[in-house]
Image 1 (tube, rainbow, N blue to C red):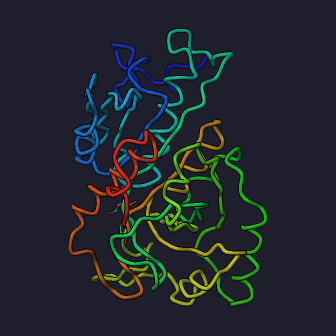
Image 2 (cartoon, rainbow, N blue to C red):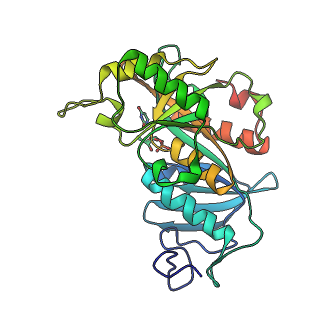
Length: 299
Ligand SMILES: O=P(O)(O)O[C@H]1O[C@H](CO)[C@@H](O)[C@H]1O
Ligand SMILES: O=c1cc[nH]c(=O)[nH]1
């Protein structure tokens, strides 16, 4: 039996942070960082059956083209991914009344629809990218031995950094997701690469406003020049490594799709971030349900 201090429930039996009850969440879950983006997604559903709000965690469940979907905001950062993924998994895979892990486990499908900064000069602003792997530079995954790592990519990264004579501020590992079976073939031009997940937006991503970033520019250059087959590090954001690591460890499938709003090599930012995020939502829903027409998803 899992003690009350570990699996914390509200007086109504719902989860401590998410305030959700069993049955309220679909097996296909869209995660977004911004709580306001939840309604932007669910506005496209044919019907919405549930709206729950607790802290930064806003959840809407509904249906689109006959597919039950949940969209939930995680807020920013992998510390929140820790909460959202553990609690959503508990909702399906722990008997909350008996506080026991269920015998039959449910495997969920996650799709992150988020924003990101491009790390390579050739990736245009307002384009979309699928994270084929994630480089964890945030610090969550060492607490989850079961999250594992892609040994070959992680070793080639370590070798590359050693060759360049640079060191990372935290131990690095690359995780590859079990990608869900979505309509990937319908968007063959979708860019892909390794997404770097940072522990913050400013210094941890190499930004300096009044405080200088301690991230070694030589490390950034070395990360940018890594090549492993056709894979390279393409973009920076703040959730994907946590999502991929925890989804893998818990037996779920996950994909992270980013709209590239900043170009960190050119020093530019999108002039139309809101419109780009709307297109990203269309693209995500098309991938999940086939809803929409090809025109709506072309970039
Ligand atoms: O747009 P979202 O999904 O929040 O994602 C990105 O934007 C936030 C930073 O502005 C971080 O959460 C980062 O991962
Ligand atoms: O540069 C960026 C843009 C969006 N989100 C990030 O985390 N970084």
